[in-house]
Image (cartoon, rainbow, N blue to C red; front, side, top):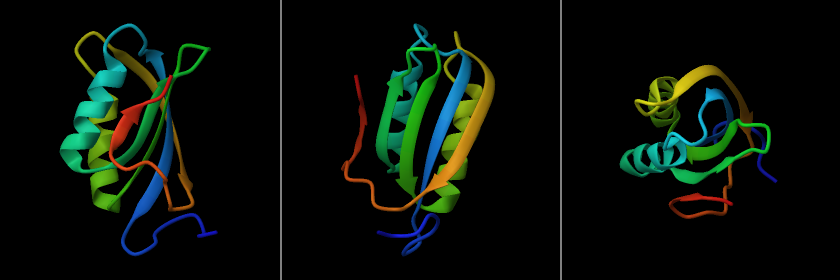
Length: 99
């Protein structure tokens, strides 16, 4: 299994977004931004009201995604973002919503 961090110029991160992030189009926003940036991964709502994301791509592109996550869609209010590096090797091609 690959180690956490960069592999072949790619990185993988998990994000947990807290605040007013459900019922405001946040998942659709994440999918749109991640696809625009060419990232692979997924986004889903968590039972506690947070949004979870796993994304893989070039490190600089992940930073661009994180900057957009801090803004969110117009109706969202992002209170907190936690992130952690994961082992590279996401099995999803493209970016999707998980239910």
